[in-house]
Length: 331
Picture 1 (cartoon, rainbow, N blue to C red):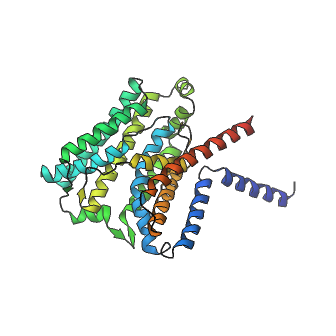
Picture 2 (picture 1 turned 45 degrees about the vertical axis):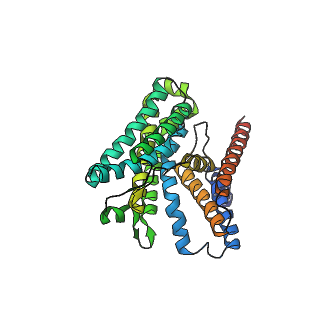
Picture 3 (picture 1 turned 180 degrees about the vertical axis):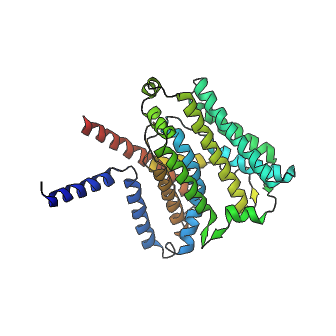
């Protein structure tokens, strides 16, 4: 084979890898949405609007990074929105109602979040109860606990310019939330792609029995994935308070829909065994873009829920068809 033919073959191989990448479809979707949005409204491409989109998407993306670990190993956490809201309310309740210093309030709230993740994972794995059922119960119970703690009214946060600047300020014209999103999603992405824990998650989601036979502690890995997911959701809730200056007992209501949608749109299988943090982050951006376009074009905000529901359905159908096609090609 000539050198020219070898270079052409390598070039075609690289193109093939790009086309087969789980994130390829969502990147195409983002480009398409941006083109349509720019044609519909001239304000879309303004720098402040782009920053606003990423700022609002960051909370969903951070939660989706943690939830991805749970979904990749074949489980799901429907209580993540309630944990996010409880994290926001618990932090403000400890710091204001109990008059705790900010740092201890944050630490105790994060410990509570990790414990709730452990509890979800333990009940699901050790008692062999489907995580869908366990976390659906948690969704309602934790939302009720949030309403009880807050007495159904917003709680203002203890003032701290340092903390507010750290999680809600800006640097070089870019919101702090965007930096947090990039940092946390990168860390989780590296853990998933480069560590034994990450490979164990894929193995368990792909074939739990084979993973057990290979010596993987399935129960331990699954519980850890729930704990990491809850930690990130709790931290995202605390970040929200640092930005807004208060917590609302209804914070995070319906967030699980946006998170699952982001993960599904990002190319992950909701049955486990596949998915990436980059894909989940890009999926969250797709949801944010659609919401932003609807707002800028004056469409009724309730259509956002319709759009997100249809987005999840379309993503699951497309991912299922692609998986079936790949299986056919392998056989």
